[in-house]
Amino acid sequence: MHASGKKLNGSEIFFECLRRENVEYIFGYPGGALLKVYETLYDVKDIRHILVRHEQGATHMAEGYARATGKPGVVLVTSGPGATNTVTGITNAYMDSSPLVVFTGQVPSSLIGNDAFQEADIVGITRPITKHNFLVKDVKDLASTIRKAFFIATNGRPGPVLVDMPKDILNAECAFEWPESVDIRGFKPTVKCHQNQVEKAAHKIAKAKKPLLYIGGGVISANASEELRQLAIEQNIPVTMTLQGLGAFPGDHPLSMGMLGMHGTYWANQAVNNCDLLIAIGARFDDRVTGKTDTFATQAYIIHNDIDPTNVDKNIKVDLPVVGDSRDFLASLLKAMPKHTENRSEWLEQIRVWHENCPLTYTLENDSLKTEYVIDEVSRQTGGSAVVTTDVGQHQMWTTQYYRFLKSRSIITSGGLGTMGYGLPAAIGAAFGVTDRPVVLFCGDGGFMMNIQELVTAVYYKIPIKIFLINNSFLGMVRQWQELFHKEKYSFTDLDASNPDFVKVAEAFGCRAMHADNPEEAKNAITEALAYNDGPVLVDFRVIKKDMVFPMVPAGASVSDMLLKRLNPKTMV
Image 1 (cartoon, rainbow, N blue to C red):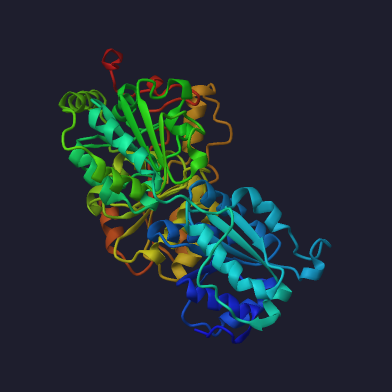
Image 2: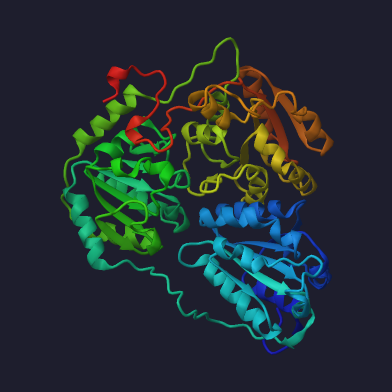
């Protein structure tokens, strides 16, 4: 490290700041506005640069790394198209509250606003999709700006921050000064929960006969899984989780109800409709969870804990808001809970009946291969211990239903934005961050094609991800909606005639690959893939074409209006 006060150019200051922030990896792609940075990078040995094949891939890799580790992901791209290629990834991180710091090169300060070659107003473009962004106008401000960027990205509700660095700033010199502390006017996240609100919550929980814990990704971001587990078990409260909250509570525990919402479990949604107390922690009442808002949890007194006060009362009016860090809230609740609470045996028995009436099931017919079987078998063979990334679509929802997540930071998926093409680069990023657990990707054939170029990255760096390609030769989720709600007019969703042979494509990239067409082949292929760790491996599972994900709540409907499979309507109570 360079001592404060030493004269450095902007590029040297950039790397010195990353060292101070303990950055391990940069996911980037060089370009003209960053030539000085990459010149300096040539001699940097303590920070590893990962060369991606598209800037969107860089943002998804950085997010995969961030979600798997809890550390901020770092992206480095050039100006103009390099910067604009990051927009989808930044938006994804913003909607799913993932800490990213995105550094973009920019044309020289004197040319900004002149429509210079490879100029784009990336600060203006990304203002609605970042927590904050900066245009550095003086090399003397570069170190303090980078310090602020990391602070904002990782404090309060996590999210992406962008720093735009003009070419002349990176070449200019000044004495390096590292700010040891950060004080940003207007950015003072509330971490500690108000004790009076916590005590009110504890009193309500103790008196509730039918309480339900509704857990979102904020619990995972706050590293509060142990406190959640302790509260749920001590108070005998069932737990349902959002897509991003899966793994916050062990999926194999009797109190775990899996996911709620549009493709959640029947018994979780019934519990929401019938609970007398809903305790939402680190969740934002997304439309895919609530369905029709005026029918959501109408019998419940609602407690809502979130570190972001703008989430409170945004979608659902709550009775008791508790603003603050989820870990602080749960730890404070544990201390505040009275010794005697209501007996909840009748409530848990009712949930058991709902579960028994409508379990998650599938059948295999005529040696055909189903996605549900593939995911179920991967869950069994990994013991629920893998870091699972997904792309977007039917396979994503089946993953929530049939993979039993036992640990926090085990699912990495695009929730808010629903970004096809997210899965492959996110899996690569996760594998850089986590080396003691297998990293598994479930990906549809449609989404896989959207960032397939990053297979080169995985091969080059010998990343041992397991790519389980769910190949139904359809845009499956869109096809499901077309069948149910659009007169079975499969307009431009059938990919059978245009899909390549994915095994041959993967092999052309230098990736080990194999086919599986039936359950026995699938089981053996999964075993083989999980045992292979010399680089990426792809298994092309040729599943049936017209399977559908159930249960399902139609868009805009109440969660009580679930479409169910293999359930006698008389049992829908």
